[in-house]
Length: 312
Image 1 (spheres, rainbow, N blue to C red):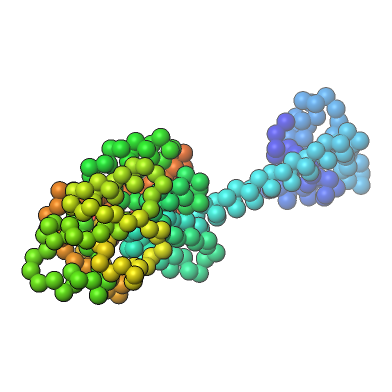
Image 2 (image 1 turned 180 degrees about the vertical axis):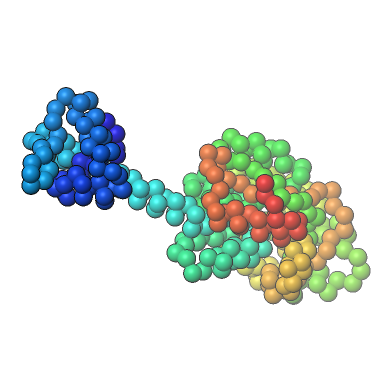
């Protein structure tokens, strides 16, 4: 007994003729008769009754018909389910990024390529911890994060224990992002680590210890005594213009031809050589595979960071 034989019984029932059923099934009449005959032999009961007016089902054949029709409906439901899951997988893009504003540029590049398709998109900027939680809870398929090279092993271990895979993209020397009215924007002379020590370092509030500790270790390496933790809302608080904010990477907006001030709405200030770097990388659940649009997004991120678009 096989699925094709169930389809054959249904077609014979609808046509009332083996000849017409064979034509609809793109079979010869003899092949169809042999197939049903083999099923009757297997089951030990007659399924068809042949008369001078056509072909009909025996009472046993009518019982088989009901099961066959249920099988076809179930098969079609499975096909629709698979098609819907494929579309959801290929035509959705759910990304979280940690204070990496070029992520939104890469996200829009991908979304615009699919503008005429039915797609679902989700992009959010959060703390690094928030990005990790988004990917863990499957609210985002991909997360873009950064970490200092001093704590990278600890970060990878925490991610691994959370069922996440981390893939590095590029390392960068950090830079300062400052509002136009910040004292350092009009500072005359070379900015040194000593220059930074009289300021407060503003960092995103982190719920995961390894990222919370990372921000404080960075402040310590800069000799900064005070750290202010804030919720990430994408704006720079005007109430404290003397605080500092570090950006994990530099040079990306210049590479894509955007003015830095327009792209990030703050002044970008270079720093002297520092005792640490930030590594940008992306995370996903180890049990998953990247969807079509997620792969496109990662290619855009790699292209922005390295000038190469191969993700393997």
